[in-house]
Image 1 (cartoon, helix red, strand yellow):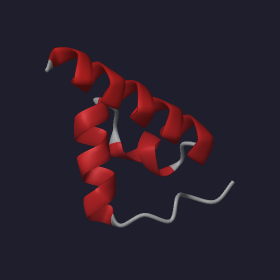
Image 2: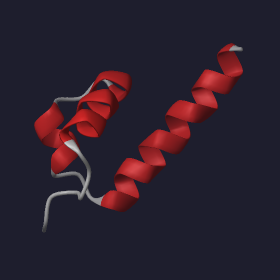
Image 3: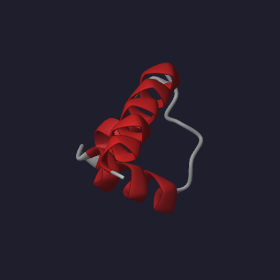
Length: 48
């Protein structure tokens, strides 16, 4: 599996917001990352 094609800055921001190590972000399958981002965004909207 290839690492995600994202910049290092983006990977750092994702790792911080999702509370996971940056290495895990870079090797996470894209569909799982998108699901985690959707879940994170849903939680953010609940808090507003």
